[in-house]
Image 1 (cartoon, rainbow, N blue to C red):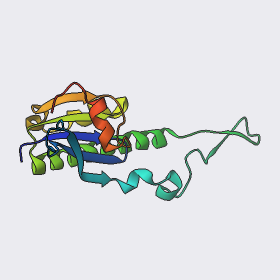
Image 2 (cartoon, helix red, strand yellow):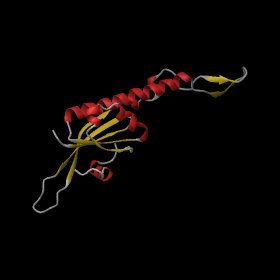
Image 3 (cartoon, rainbow, N blue to C red):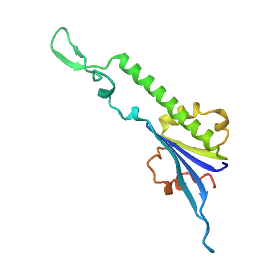
Length: 158
């Protein structure tokens, strides 16, 4: 199908919307409808550390000169694990974006994600899909009502 799409992503969701003209009534101006086509929620991102691991991050006390525990410190391994989880998350989100674009085959598409995810996700989007990318926004629009999306993607005419 050759249509226009908005693809939105955040740390646990991907939403794809199809944009099309609504039927005209007599002499009423044409309106644009934005329809949710696919919504993916990654359950793993909504789990807490306590649900993922047996020990809470920072649960190991650091003692000062053999005295009682005065502070807690996250280990380097915990930070490394967070970095690896972020990389895995980005690849999963991009995989869903690719799958949606392969299935729907839009004529062009626009993409929005928060600044920290934006470039990372687009790096993993297949080249043939990046070529059809008309507009990108560094904003988290996943929770924006569909009828309000056109206001954010004003740079691309339908």
